[in-house]
Length: 549
Image 1: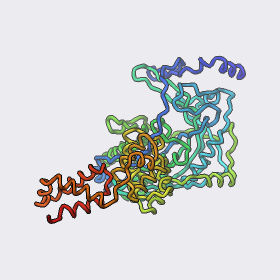
Image 2 (image 1 turned 60 degrees about the vertical axis):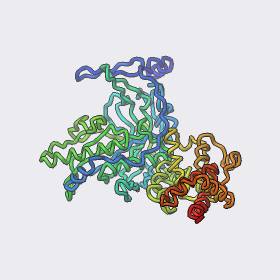
Image 3 (image 1 turned 30 degrees about the vertical axis):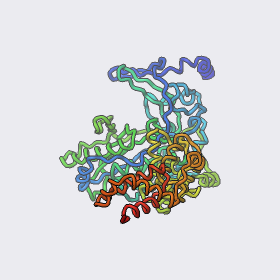
Image 4 (image 1 turned 45 degrees about the horizontal axis):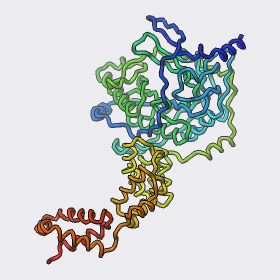
């Protein structure tokens, strides 16, 4: 029977590639298959992580509330792994594929199909566990988590229950200065491996929902934090750090808009001084760090208001969604009690056994992580604002490190990257890897300005041309004759000419309008085509302007 079924699958794929439709009929649900009407989506370009969560304008109100109440926040973060294939089969792990084209009997949950573990999932689990300072389980196992969703074809999820691959870790991060600054350490309860479910696509105009199983079986690492966070800002910064770490490690692109990083936030509040936790509420549908911060702050306010009104019993264990349009959380479903997932060991997969040599080899291959990079930049003498900007994106950090590795002064390199280069990339909607300015040329540009070969103004002109067209600093200086004029006699001739041609302004300057010095300096710069050394120019100009005829 199973052989016949598999032959049918191979010979008649079209009948299986249709998107399942779930028709809603009052309280009943029926499922049928039909051709997909969902257009293909293209993989989004990886966007830089948000460095900070935008400030909530209700922060003053929250400050008043938190005088009497303390928020307790924990986060479950699902990181979708950037493996070539799925967790337990050889189907391609491609975001944006046409619906139901990356599926097979294993990820569809068909009878007789057996899972085979992708070793890359274990490697990524170890890498993330080590990065989060966790204790690794040299012997762990997979378990079946039983529950029903229309987009969960097997009727269970392969996950890890009582023996996760990593546990008992922590993460260190810095809060941005605009939110008070400071260093925080948040505990990590566990990291475990599991597979993703499919995706339900709900129609706004029709009475059915579509199911795309391409995501079913895609590997995930779930990171469960300790309930150590106390505000929306702290929670958003924690989630940002999870994204940064995943990207630094190369285990995931971390793009929230693709669902590669998904966060479920658990929030409760309690009166200050109370040891017992309050009633926990879960918030889903958080697709941006700024939304997470706002959703948490709203939920804290909502729960505190109920406490103040003597209605604490109305805070119930439930799942709520964040409504971005209304800027509030709304009830999704109530939880009558703890879910009984009826875990039991996965019978079709062996234990995961790690050797110490394997763990040590992965530890040795870990890159410098965000926290270590921030501390190194701080030790270089950079301010916290510079440190947070540069370490936020791994590509920016690598570019900066390469520039200073070629001899550029640390602060000057940081200023150029954070200033004109960052503005150019933002305007052109490019990543730092897409621009034509190489690290070697930026280092040479900084050196040319510092040693006086060219002025800062000329340096900016060269920078923008290099960003747009590429090329070399030396070649451009030679081609356009941009070498700075440092001969005092030559600059003096230009100053004398400008002063003699502007007698009216000279009289005004000498009668007290000293701000006209800038006018004269500008005229000399114009005459020199921006090549006059600014220091020499101003020195000679002042001598001529203040000279007694």
